[in-house]
Length: 390
Length: 145
Ligand code: SF4
Ligand code: SF4
Image 1 (cartoon, rainbow over the protein chains, first blue to last red):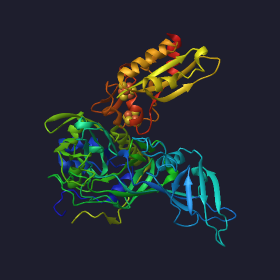
Image 2: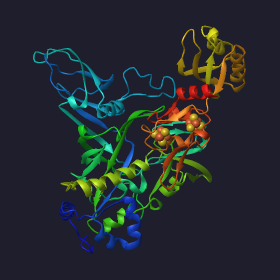
Image 3: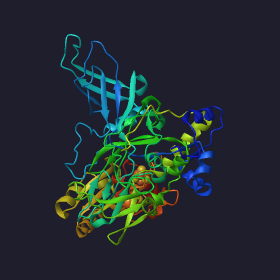
Image 4: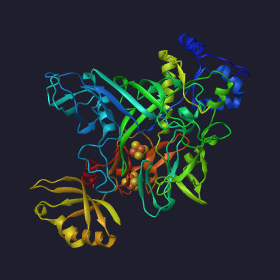
């Protein structure tokens, strides 16, 4: 990095944010700035690039402390709105996971199942301010004699609620097709037989991790937009794989890095945390995330200038290859191709549909920009960087 | 497999007859009740998804008409709840009529009720259930018509 012509620190950028001088643009706006002015000039002018993504993100959930009661109670089994939560933490600490279905959900017994309500919907109900009913049972101890509990509460009543997502913000993801001769229902949506449609799930040029491909700025302590409130990157996510193959521009062409994210649930809103039902697959949570990227030098400016034409992913068959762990693909396509609505697979033109909301991703990037410009939202200084494969 | 959504209006003299049972037994047509508003002494209204071989569905529908049920295919009956819709675009991949489509380059997801055939495919595909069969609007329309 010694050869960089522009060198800024996050502290310097924060000082500019405090004095109202910081120049903040969204990742989409940065594309033309880097194209017109070049990376060095862009790095001089721009302090922060804001990113965003809003899509179903499994591996999400919330830690909740529901408060002590009398007689005292220690949760052994517990459910929120009939969705089982994990109580094996302490007396009244629980974790509700996004993909947990309702206790008596018919699941896939009548295929494809609808999965109308689950952990993600409980979290959405909480942030929407709706009342949630907890039912729990305990085995009774001398210090916690109470054996059963029914309690309703709203988010405001809870002593503690933390959104804690062990894996969010996948850096790139597969484009899914179905080459079998019957419709299949997957976490990538409904896929018609014989490859007649394809789905993909990334905000592309707006996506946080695609704008900082080697995690030069994103690390433990990066302050972010999470579910409409303030959150933090607290570790790399599960399945974080920096060794995934990359293009010449450094951007992975397969699912690669991931982030573990946390934030105070009480600050969040149901506009940015939505319970999701994927037909035939299950329920989960759509999470809105935005990461501000400090432009510390021209290398990072160049990275944030990446556009959909320069981001590629592989086309994967979800009827057989994915479920059997077969590492085969049916070619690589760019996000510009995917967003055009048609790609070519095996010489045939196939219709594409997104699962990730670009409109909302853009809104998150704009909101984050506003937070920095108007509310003095300062950037977190990472205390530890994410594993980057080197 | 043929799958269509119909609004059935039952005249009040027929409301307690097991018409739907007969549809299943004699015409081999399965159904999902999407909405029902039945009041004895009054006209009844059911939004029904009929599933079966096309010929069976059609003869079943003629039977319904023969016993005085008014049958209408749901067209404008699908509505989008714009507060729920988060503009993901998942529905655009399965909508057969392009009633749900993407405006480029913004990637905004548009819904044009004029183009909607009422097939109902989007209802279960939409991950936040923003697409719903809207009975009220249909009633208003038929009342006006
Ligand atoms: S009901 Fe069918 S035609 Fe109408 S919007 Fe939904 S998928 Fe499209
Ligand atoms: S699938 Fe549902 S949420 Fe997504 S764009 Fe369509 S209507 Fe909106």
